[in-house]
Image (cartoon, rainbow, N blue to C red; front, side, top):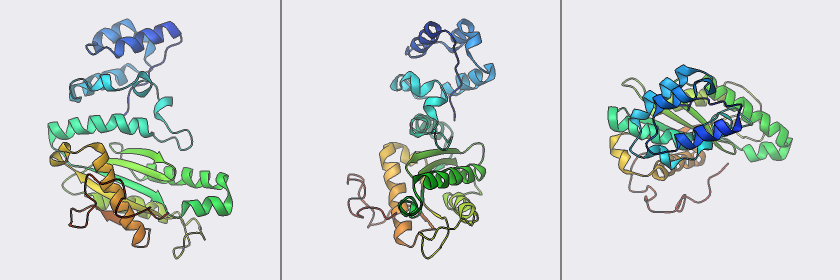
Length: 260
């Protein structure tokens, strides 16, 4: 779910291409013909062109050129993972795919347990190394078709397609176990004494397309809160219950601040 890599040595040509791409009726084959040397890999353009057929009408006009073009703007500098701009763009593609093919997906939010205490005890340089280690571990535990993002701070987001033999719980458990098996000591994380993550998950299908992205994240965040309250280093999958936070409520309004 990545955008293609665009590279132009001439600023004027680059600006021309950017302006052309942002037109609501732009033509991808014509773009490739006019700017053949600007693309690092022509097959990436072909792939992106094919996938634009899955976008909702007018989808491309919602985004700035920096969000569509260039890996730098779409990559988190510290971890090398895709960032929130990538996540925002990929959510639009995900909605179109669910609408067209009906395949269920899962949204996961993973948070490093007691990360603030790591920074307080060992300093921010050590904290950065922890985030890099977690990012590398999550990356090694996901599939090529999964989307992995640094969501912010010590929090990571995953967008994963589900199959008849996989569930949100299965995928969340795989990444939770991978981080735990690093066996990285963390005295600031009792009673586990090692680096761990907590995960909140929500399943998304055609029925959830009527909901805003913010509702999806609120549900995953509610599940993550419950995982923290239950003792950390565990997984919670959001389920509709009478005690769930109402859709219209502010984030964590009933639950209060999420534990670290």
